[in-house]
Length: 305
Ligand SMILES: Cc1ncc(COP(=O)(O)O)c(C=O)c1O
Image (cartoon, rainbow, N blue to C red; front, top):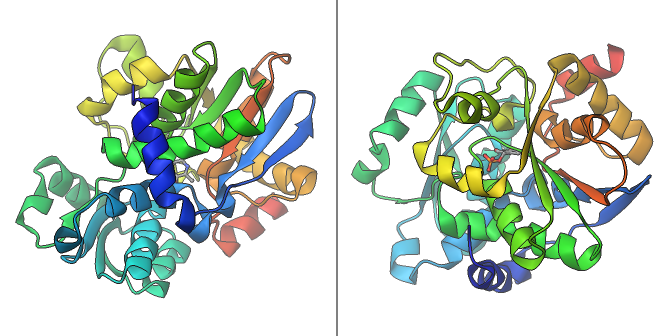
């Protein structure tokens, strides 16, 4: 687990650049932590600012490089823009157009490649041959400490919190938030959620090894990160319960969330909300709405379903 000290110091460093996101009451002991209201529409700026601001200026001036399904790419481009350095991102060629445009809007250079090519590059540590400073999109403790800032905020906004529900891809978000909350209140239950269209972690913990040949078939593209062995132990410590949301339920949850809470989340962002119905009511529970970058065409299709 990350220490409260590193999480607090990341929160201190990043404070001038970030929003303190609202905690919206849903009733019946449930709240939404609106991380989709951060700049670029997801929590990812927390980690990228934390990692970039920890660098000495001469390293930062080399520019930033990351690899991403989309939200990390946009966050990296935004952070680089704010800090006045260049940025390049390797993205899956299946990334939603909105996210590719989001990178370009902040002056970042997207390089779109087939998923397998991106994963191979990541597995062979391709960044070591590149000039820029590489920020890993999830398996970086400094970045994860930045995400932990959302956990500190939840604890101060809702001191009685007993349960937090978080969408999981690579695992950086849940490890950051879980470390912060458990550091402050060890009895808090951390629930990790994935879609049945890309269910990686529950089977991994059940069988001891990641499922072979897993290919994402989900609108929660933010949670389609590959298995990374360095995250295994971190997630074993920080996640108490794994839930799986069926893809049709996730699709229905987006319009439901829009009409119930006036919140338009993307697939990965709505996973935590969609999972709430699987939890027995009672303990004060926060669902982290982690991102809102939803393509208009997909939103229209979901509303028409
Ligand atoms: C909206 C959203 N939610 C959740 C996640 C999962 O975060 P992590 O990969 O840190 O588990 C991502 C990752 O990109 C995301 O974009």
